[in-house]
Amino acid sequence: MAQSVHIKGRVLVYTVLGCPSCVAAKNTLARLGVPYVEVNLDDYDSQEKQTLVNRTGKRSMPQIFFNDIFVGGYDDLATLTKDELQGLVDEVINNTAPPSAPVVPCLGAITMGSSLADDRDRDQYAPVVTDLSRSGLIQTHRRGIRLYKKSFVAEEFVQWLSLNEKYSYDRQGARTVGEELLRRKFIRRLTRDGDHHQFRADAMLYRLLDDEEWEALNAGPVSLSIPRDAVELSKALQVLMKKIYAQHISSDGKVGV
Image 1 (tube, rainbow, N blue to C red):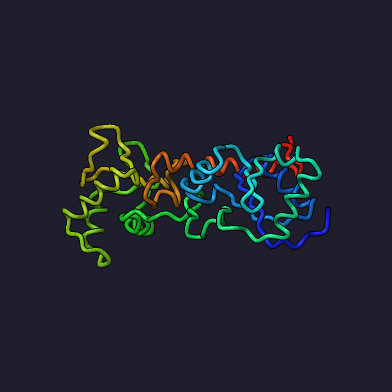
Image 2: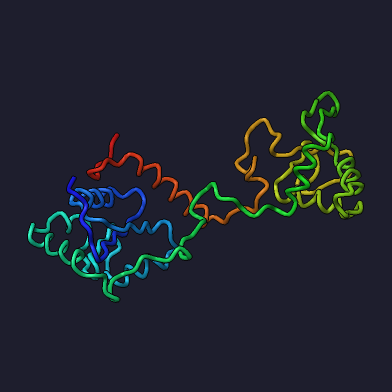
């Protein structure tokens, strides 16, 4: 690797996750000893990428700038002659980036919604669910010859919630909460008879989805949060898959098996 050179200007490399050409371009610049600033567009909102596309007319990555000179992608960088490459290096060594050069996006443009592990806004009924799980109401109940483990009786739930000083529900309000827990898939009805979408504040048995023997996709910490819409979740999954893929890209841009 060449010794790093001091530059007055700026080399800007736009990248995305899981991009072998991006990795190869960055390593090429590193071997040349040319300092660069990476802008991973997956960390920014879509407007940042659209601004770049409007400037270059290209959507593929990486996109490389030496000050305001647009080089292109990795293939363009790799096919430069020695003199052409030296001319670009001299440009950033001797000249500061002019106003026409692209700038590094400000931190305020970074989006924080690209990970599946982000903290979400808690559902308004999450505290009730948490307290219910610790209330002692959840036990094994018998109906006929059948035992229902980790279940609770609806009328006992209504009484417990209406008398709980932490909340301000009367019996009707507590029943409405039960209806909301059922509608929002926090709980499910255990017996087969009747309308399973209706909360009955009687001896009917219910169970928290977190207590099911099978693991629901919306169980655990996720169940206490406001659900993401499909578009947002799809984008988060794409970013996660790119991160996994990126772990298998070697320094020369090849994908290992």
